[in-house]
Image (cartoon, rainbow, N blue to C red):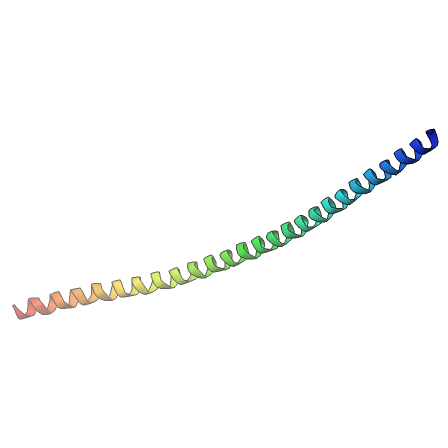
Length: 92
């Protein structure tokens, strides 16, 4: 009687250990996939921040160029305004 009870309880414990092992393996696989996803997300974030920094650098260079052009045009407008005023004073 004790031998059969011991055999049944041993088999039951082995089945429970197998179930626990299965769930631990599944959990481990999920953790590994989550880690891979996290690494991919981190790489994408780094690439995106690098791209944004590059674009900001280009914007700064473009704005400097545009500011130079605007200043040059403003100076030309001032010169033309003076010339127009001189011509108007000669006419009147």
